[in-house]
Image 1 (cartoon, rainbow, N blue to C red):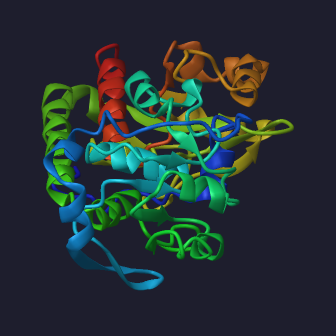
Image 2: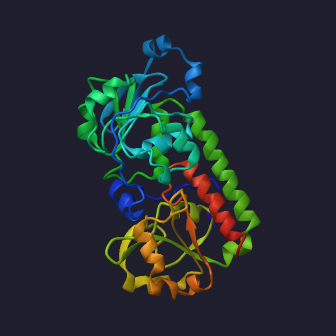
Image 3: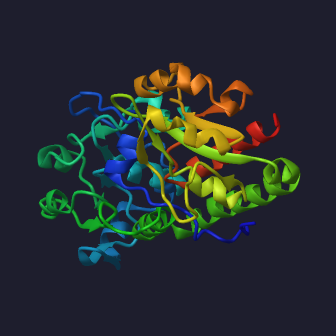
Length: 331
């Protein structure tokens, strides 16, 4: 059984696989540059602009050693995952990519916090004028190094490569927290996660020992994606993973509906659900398929939708633990 302190099983979160594996969950909503502020950021009240401007520190990033403010307060992010990681440390960015604030893809509290934040262009194509308009003191990027580097005349750019690296989501979260000098806040929410793992493992030890799980979501044209970043939470809870998913596999393996029988060794299936309670179209098609409905765990009433499916931060991981606990209580 995985210990509460073991995070080595946490899986990769890559942009291409992640977006595809969620079956279109992270759809882009077209919108223009909108005004926003960081008034909800409680950390801002503790620092003065002059102190932040006069004090600097160096961050070791994948684009070199970057000099940044000692306590950044106005952060622009070029990808949506950085938004969620900043929420772990109590920060709201002043600029985000278009589509990030889609209400169906976010918990209500995170959506409310970023709904009025200025958008700075579509993911991968940040608009320099829009970025400059919010006067950032730091720009965070995890996927678009070349495009982000073009923004260096505006503010320091810190790039933590996640697109083609072996970094795990919790490692990326730690680097983001360090870049904004709030690692102490990340420690707090990580401790909550580890405490919840231990609590659920103890309370539902019998159900955990007797069940075999697999996460999946719908794909295009009669396919589904086996696996999810949610595997990290399942493994940390000590759950047995079935469907031929290896111990070190990160997930998002595309398979045909004809391969759904691979799920027959499972006693519990979990599939992606939007935060508004709906299913993305590919997943809705999957669960309506007769082959799916004939699977043993589905027939037994042990297929469950999960909102916190795309785990990429401790906030999301804690939400996933809550949902899995609710499922365990039904077994």
